[in-house]
Amino acid sequence: MKKLLKFMMAMAFLIVVLAACGDEDTGGADDNGDDVYENGDNGDVDDTDDVDDVDDNGDEDTGDDADVNGGDGDVNVFLIAHSPDSILDDGSFNQGAWDGIQRFVADNPGTEYSFLQPHDASDEARLDLIEDAIDAGANILVLPGFHFENALYNAQDIFPETTFVLLDASPRDEEGNARIESNVAAIHYAEEEAGFLAGYAAVVEGYRDLGFMGGIAVPAVVRFGHGFIQGADHAAESLGLDEGEVEINFMYLGGFAPDPAHTTTAAAWYAAGTEVIFVAAGGAGGSVMSAAEGEDASVIGVDVDQAHLSDSVVISAIKGLDVSVYDMLVDFAGGSFNGGNEIRFDASNNGIGLTLESSRFDNFSQAEYDNIFEALRDGEIDVNPSLEFDDIETNLVSVSEL
Image 1 (cartoon, one colour):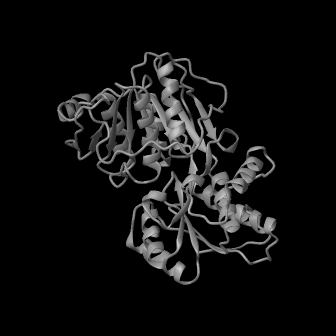
Image 2 (cartoon, rainbow, N blue to C red):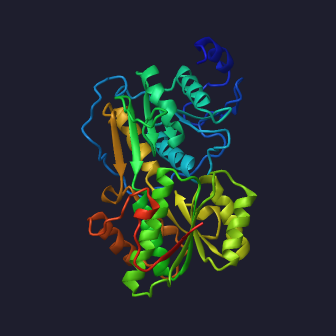
Image 3 (cartoon, rainbow, N blue to C red):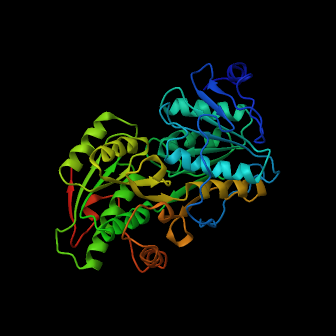
């Protein structure tokens, strides 16, 4: 790992993190090629509250370290991207986390905050960047996605007085063994429930030829897709449709970055009759939207409300990224950070949902959404969270795994 002096010399004039009250933003790259954006540079995103505030729903708090639990009101938060290609205004995962930070900053003027990108997509680069942020004064770091599992597994021990919020994952070693120390909160979301709502709504709206495109078959993406299948099947049963009347093409793109090849694949699906594609693939979703625009077809967005990205987005299946980050920052500032735990956001605490306010649906109504969401929240509907494709049973929907 880099020595402290190395970073201090490289970053002395770059990381002057400004209070969020009108100071001039700066952005650029440090000597290691790490991109540095401070207090909103590289695309501020609006704070959007698509789901209600929720309370933590985790296990008993195992952390008793006063430093990592916060409480002195001094918050210096860094959001760290997993790769050089992972931008702040990605219209998806990073944006959702940044929304939560922005909302906290709006409520707490004077909060210092920054966004960093590593010079490459390795665990070593991520760990180096974590050290960089801490050297620059960060006392709480938000790490979005499974890419940080290995780096944080080590960082939680190396930096025991720094607090970490890991989204969509838990710290794991190279063998996959999880361990969460008292300075870490591992946030998880019920993507299978959000996907279920998306599939249900699509079929009730009137779509019969559906598609799912995931980025990589990691747990969060897999659960989105498997929930989508189950929701479509549930709607088909509710509507009394015939077996095979609803069809779903299902595939993983192999990455989360935009790629013309994804546009070509999606365009071929649309040309062959697919009416709507639920795409859970981060920045690659933009490639699918481009195809939908060219074919006058539809897309279901993911993670955050993506209606502003394209007129092709008819609705988005969201998880409370902004809410969970905001809540963790509030807890940290107040000295009640829930470290040492996995914390789950689901329908029971309004941690997932659909974006009805920006929906471009004609038939699926608010009342229908409220009814299905209530059934999900109250446990009347059990969505299988299994990561095994063969475990997902359907009665009426035909699924083609491509």
